[in-house]
Image (cartoon, rainbow, N blue to C red; front, side, top):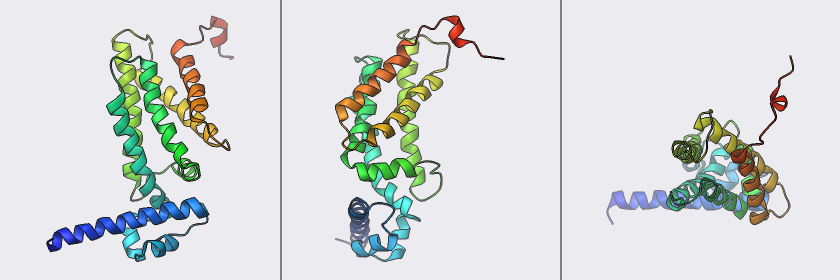
Length: 212
């Protein structure tokens, strides 16, 4: 192996050790009680090496989580099908995310808390790309359904997708706060809420009046 190849191998090895150390400590001690220095020590690297990939402990958390979120997007894209209903495709995407977050609830709860206003940091851009990709998967499905006349609305597909995304974001946190989150029960409740959006409530005109 030449020097360039060896250097790249060493970089990948150090990155893997940092990820494994962060995962182990976040899982055993919790995100709040773990320090960046402890992660560097367990990984057997200097603080300078850690800072190549993460400016903060929050970055270290998303150094791990981003891998899982990117896998969710890739698998969702590969699994949805034009032969499936809109609801089926939406649930494929969102259930895959639920399943990921359920794998390690301790780390997932920390990630869901820390992702609020996560706009700066070495892993922030990568995280926001996955969030953008998720929202656009929803928008694309809803746009296609509107174009085919499968659903009808005077609202833009972006707004409809935002409603679905908001339900997912809130219910995911409620579900994950349970002591033992059950994937089937959680995604069934999510399904009923999305069905509510797709079916509408057929309101009487008086239900939509705004008081002066």
